[in-house]
Length: 195
Image 1 (cartoon, rainbow, N blue to C red):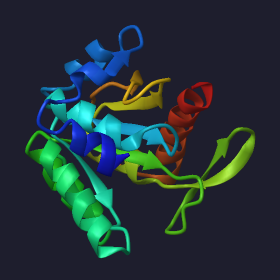
Image 2: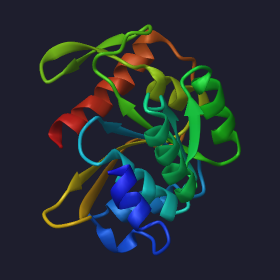
Image 3: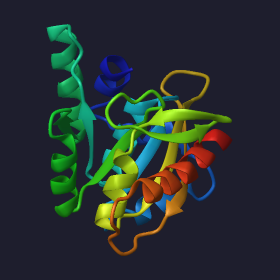
Image 4: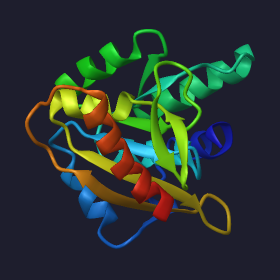
């Protein structure tokens, strides 16, 4: 997807490739002047969503573990860089995401339900799942808004539908406790389960 779709439309832009569920485009555009935490499930078209958010000038950034193939990794990085997406290596990623948000950027995180590093256990389709805490922790620590997002492929070539739901508006900074992270992550999961 990155190597084909994003490279093909890098010069002309991909705006014509997207349609939005009612209110989704307006909600995402309203995040332009604030640092938001945008959360997706590992489903749909993650790369295309990053391109859409970059074209909206939300200055997105996300973590990346490069593919082991040097040439594929080089082209993936070039595609993401071409859209203006900030990339954070896994090591020290939270610190880098927080610094990116201080400059007005947003972060896109895919919530994993098979997390290995200090997970929290949150219901996911009726079963407790070992889930990444990063999205909730970053939002709570920054007082940032949280938006559950999805980007679904449509029939045809390079056609996508984007949806978004506000989970938590911008607010005061909070202490990151397990209870607070679980509560916020549960709200995110409910929205993504519905999608």
